[in-house]
Amino acid sequence: MTSIVLSSVEEARILREKTANSNKILFVAIKRIIDIVLSVVLAALTLILLPFIALAVKIESPGPIFFKQKRVGKDGKHFMLWKFRSTHRISVDETVGWGEEGDHIYTKVGRFLRKSYLDELPQIKNVLKGEMSLIGPRPERPEFVEILKKEVPFYELRLLVRPGLTGWAQINMENRAFAHEAKEKLRYDLYYIKHRTLLMELKIILKTLAMLSKRTGR
Image 1: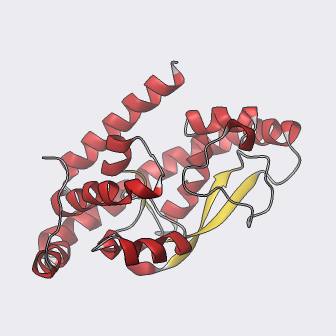
Image 2: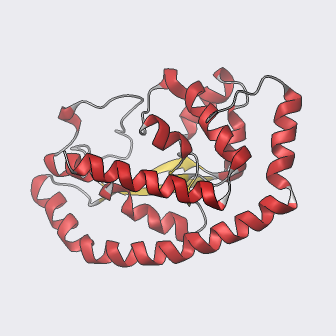
Image 3: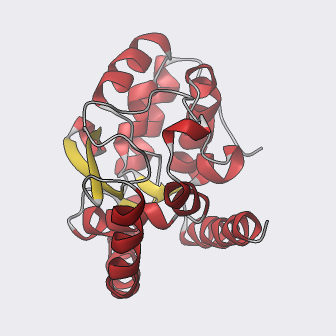
C-alpha cells in the first residue's frame, strides 16, 4: 500500500497526534538540517546556472526572469513561491489554472526548464527560509486550497507539514495538477505524512532523480 484513505474524524485525529509525537519531532529536526545542507549545495548550483538561465529567458520573451505566486504552506500560512519564468505571461495575476498545459502557454526555454525541473531551483530560497522543505506535499494556491477544503474531506491535513519541491504524491502521480485528481493526490500525501522516515525521504529523492534522468533523456 502506498496511499491511505481517511474515513472518519477519529482517524484524522490519530494522524494529527502521530505528526506531533516525540519521534516525529526528532525526525523534523533532522529533516530540517538535511534541508539546509542540501539547499546550500543547490543554491551554489543555482548561482552558477543563474546568468545562463536568466539570459535565455530574457532573450526569448520580454518580462521578468522570476515568477512569484502566493501559495499555502504549513498550518495554512501563506508565502511567496519563486520560480524561473517559463511562460509568455508576465503578470502574476495571469496564472495557469488546473490542467492548463497547452504548448502555447510556455516558451521554448520554459518547456525545457519545466521538463528538467530547473524552473524550480529558485524555491531553494523558500526552503532556506523554512517556508518549504525539499520533500513534502506540493504547495497549492490559496484559492485552490479553499475550494478543495470544501470538496475533499480532510484536505486540510496536508497542511500539517511543510510543502516540498518533490514528494510521495509527486513521484507517484508525476506532478499532475488536475482538479479531479485531488482526492487521489491527497491519499498519497496522507500516506507520506503518516509514514515519513529518513529512509522514505531517501527513496523519494532517488526516485525523483530517476524521473528527472528519464525526462531529460527523452
